[in-house]
Image (tube, rainbow, N blue to C red; front, side):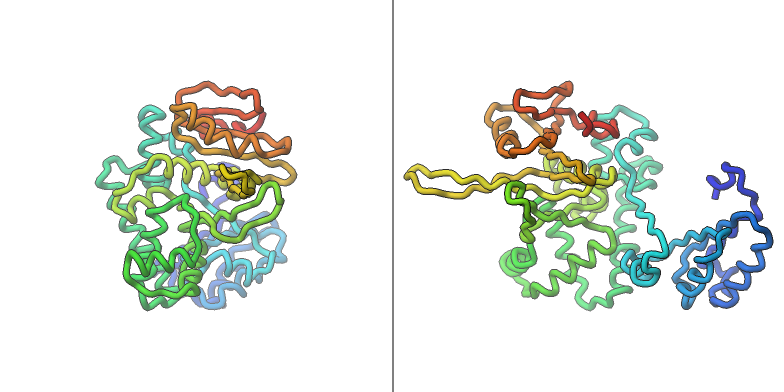
Length: 377
């Protein structure tokens, strides 16, 4: 609203309605809402309709569709996750609406309002995440309380309301397992076995798959599928799951596990998504021979295969490159990729960006995060 005003839009051209406000309860009737909006549109200038919590209106889809062909009306709506998810937008509007996905703050955005060094900012970001309120709250206690309440009162409540899940303990335990193993390869079968062996709980593969789909729908986690780089084909299972916000992930497991290597990998993955890239987990298959001269196949992992149209790059997340052996390990998969796309290794080491003899670019994590063009060569 403030943005519209800054662009010279007159107050009369902005129709803002908070449908959660009891004072607007009559407007939850679709016909009354439609008549009210129509009564406000009295000129040919562009009008901007802002509807908050639109799911409180019965048949709200009909109300929105009524303005699709009006050239001087631009409609923006928000809604609760439990009633109004991305799949609903796709189903109800069939390409006639535009969905804006709002991610947590990027590290660059977070750092721009953080009072402290970039090192302190990164530690804070890896611990409490990038939700906008986190950038405002001052103490660790306030941030932890906020994240815990958000998880329980918004995410879990919305999931239960929408999907009518009876065994909430199973769902919450699955979230715990995923939070404890971010960046690890897994699939519903592996997760089922984990429930049996570690939790002594029997849960079907179909139920686990259903829960995983739910967690992706509510934007809690993202799934990254493996891609055979040489074979140029996808390997459907196992896959990796990353949390959309690290603060929520850490709050879920009471900040017990702070594995910097896994957190940094999740951070890089989220940053790549924010930049609009399609991100897969890469696999390089090598045909080698063992000590007995027998043929064997080895699979080397590339953390991220990033695609943007016809452009591609490969990225390894390497927190430390402290030994020659560690350096060789990170390079091994990259040097066996026989194409001309750019290859990167991102590390926390205090290095200046450089390119080695194999064409691999090494860069510091801060240079990657704070420069939106860091993947361009």
